[in-house]
Image 1: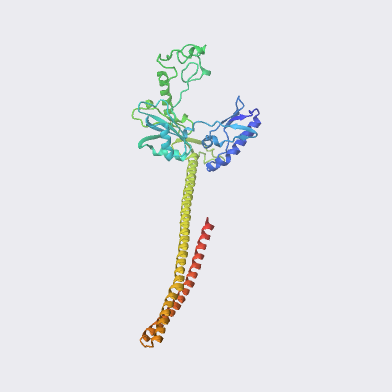
Image 2: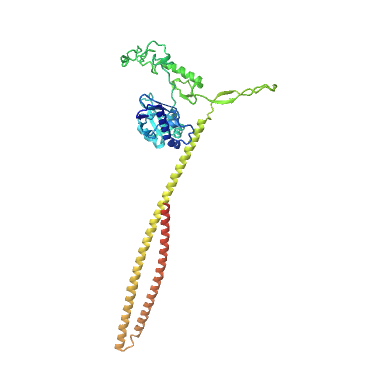
Length: 461
């Protein structure tokens, strides 16, 4: 953690550490609700440049703080610039084996991020590439996604199936930086001088050995003396693996080491060395039953090796996995509810639009009918009555002038026609008035229903 101004006092550094932990505690607890350990850094110190250095052994906190955006930018009037780790712990690292060279890391990342959202880093493993393929190392932030990937055992990349395995580090060899031989350190080395690992000469003047001839002083091979090609290194490595294979209890708890294929026995399928899990088993009580004053012996504790994996770490992992699964179920349910609600709102909006169109159509039809009714009532019936009345008057005058009875039947028919037109007009007017009253009532009910629907829709929104 780069600090400006620089740290000088241990008390201020301790306060800064507490402030950083308080800053990240809320988001960390939300992301890791099953985490029950104290939230703290395993070690911190002020380096020579006045910056804060921290060591974290908790995998959950390590993964959480691997994201630079989760650090504060300023605390205690001090500007902070975080430099998070570039790699995740080995417990969250997997290997895609024999990935074709035609598939680039960019293509692989695009394919992986479709299914796995917590990809942190992908990189090619040194020493595995050949003309056709290579191994690729994958680091993932989400433990559940990592377990799903490793347990699946395979992965589909652009239609090609590749094997996936858990990343296990091979046993590393402690090599002395003074004599370049394995098995001890420079502090306990008995060599009289510091030997160059390139040419095997005395490295008094280091500038002379920057580009010296490469020749192993252990086997005279064309490689450096610390290269794994050296037979001396290979022999020591084989002895180390055999010793760990015979005594796996010497490994720290929950540590697994990968056995390279060159160091496996013929027909051996085991690829790793793991420290056995210890289980407590009490011994039987032994005391003299005939002596009434004798106290029973204290029950000694004995520990035996076992392969049982029921420990607190696994229980915590199971709790965390189930909690994450519950969170995902809740999120999926909420998304489904949101989709249903959105669909329901769209349906209501469509219904409202249909109601409004229907109301407008009803008004238009009412206007058309009222216009036609007015035209019939004001034009057709009066015109017919006027025409028949005029003909009746003309015929009546002709009868008086001509003084004849020939027009009596016509006059009677015209008089009957005039009465029929008047009765028809009156009946038509009464019928239209009744229909108009009924239409007004229907419109009132329709408007009430439409207003109620619009009110309910706006209230829900």
